[in-house]
Image (cartoon, rainbow, N blue to C red; front, side, top):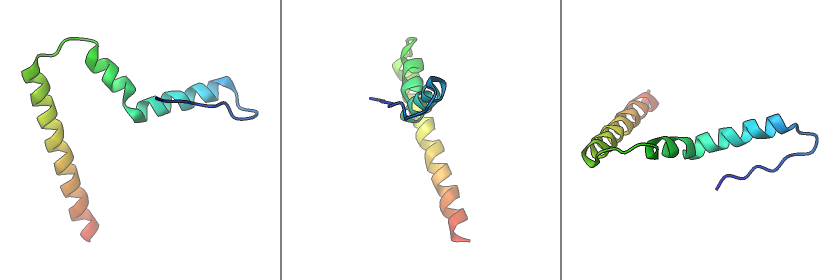
Length: 68
């Protein structure tokens, strides 16, 4: 759950921006968008597999880059 406490002398707009940023980082918007329409199980599995591959490739690039 995302909570934002308004700091002293902080505007409401700034607090809302912090709230939105925390929601983005926690993945709430992404989860809500994914649940807003039906996705076939095969499509969901395929997307998850592609995401895993993407993360693994990115980690490999970072690992190779860190050596030099």
